[in-house]
Image (tube, rainbow, N blue to C red):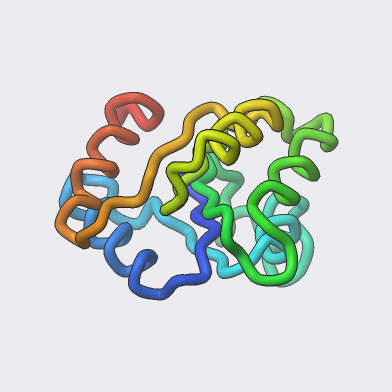
Length: 136
């Protein structure tokens, strides 16, 4: 089972990886640092063309604040790809702005989670994701 995590903050990736391990989802998290890499991953383009090494995800976690292309732009691209329209996408952002939440939902996000203020709270997020989206 693979979760593609589109996040450019190394600390957030580290916290989420630890949280996934704590809730029994070791090895599930596949981080990429920007939207273009996520697009290549989902399209099985180099360097992600080997689906054994880079399995298709069952879920995507996307930060909104990414370099070059935003999480909104990635979500818009994703929903234009017929083969990717059913992929569950969770926006995972520090923004609690109602207009960001509404825009994410309009663009087809399945859920919107606000990033916790401390690393220890990532475990609660990982547990929620496991229970709702990653029944294992």
